[in-house]
Amino acid sequence: MDAAASPSIDRKVERVISIRDLHVSFGSNHVLRGFNLDLYRGENVMVLGKSGSGKSVLIKCVVRLQEPDSGHIDVLGQDVLALDQEELDRLRVKIGFLFQSSALYDSMTVQENLEFPLRRHWITTTPEETDALVDEVLTAVGLAHTRKLYPSELSGGMRRRIGLARTLILKPEIVLYDEPTTGLDPITGKEIVELILELQRQYNTSSIIISHDLHVAKLAANRIALLHEGRNYMEGSYHLFRDSEDEVVKRFFVFM
Ligand SMILES: Nc1ncnc2c1ncn2[C@@H]1O[C@H](COP(=O)(O)OP(=O)(O)OP(=O)(O)O)[C@@H](O)[C@H]1O
Ligand SMILES: [Mg+2]
Image 1 (spheres, rainbow, N blue to C red):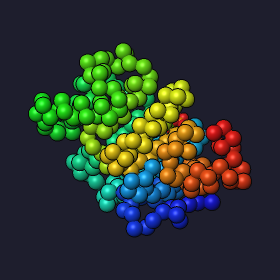
Image 2 (spheres, rainbow, N blue to C red; image 1 turned 90 degrees about the vertical axis):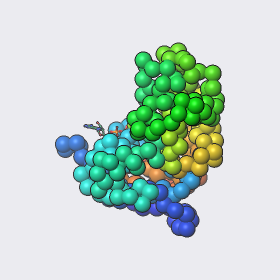
Image 3 (cartoon, rainbow, N blue to C red; image 1 turned 45 degrees about the horizontal axis):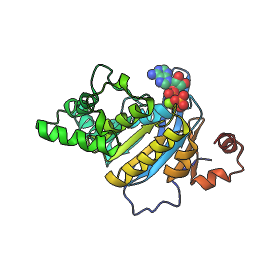
Image 4 (cartoon, protein in one colour; image 1 turned 60 degrees about the horizontal axis):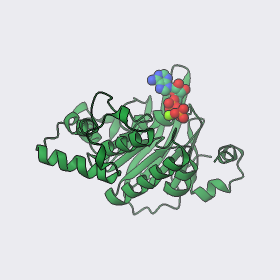
């Protein structure tokens, strides 16, 4: 089975990401073998797949942190694999990337961590504007009181929230989440899922969410895609997956 796009998606809605026939290999390890996926404006697509199946590699390709062997990736109307460095930098400003580890800088305060993307992308703001932006995203993730703290002074769940705030500071149109709840207790994980939904509403973001988490599948995913043996094996709603008799799909949902 290979699904390019769910038939239930309204074709009138703008497509913000289109991935076609994507191939990525590391030596003889052929990780992605013709993967297809679409993301439409305003939706959250969850990508499910076993460890090592290529989920992180997939979303790294979208921002060209990983160069694919072949295929086509279109993001916000641009042919990503054909962009030069400057065009790519401009596109990356519109794409938030939440890494599998929160990847905060330990030597910087929360405030400095949050300012970093602005500096990284040469976005000039006055100190007042910067403060207002930092305030806004910290409030959005419910951690307004932490700006002077260092990452080592935060809990795992708080670090994840700060990672989210740092992703949001550039007001991205698209957010790529790599396992946003992994390693957190179920309650904190659920809070992060609720936060992702809130941010989707507040900022009208479109997201690809890599996850194994039942809460993500049930609450946050408008659509689920299963990455299996390098391809988009099946795609559809949570209910479609939950009720599926397919052996590969059942193996995943037993644990969910
Ligand atoms: N830079 C790299 N060099 C060599 N092999 C790599 C590289 N990046 C990823 N791989 C390999 O590609 C495969 C897919 O890796 P990836 O990190 O995408 O898995 P994943 O599905 O995200 O797994 P997990 O659920 O454990 O995070 C793995 O076999 C991994 O070893
Ligand atoms: Mg991964």
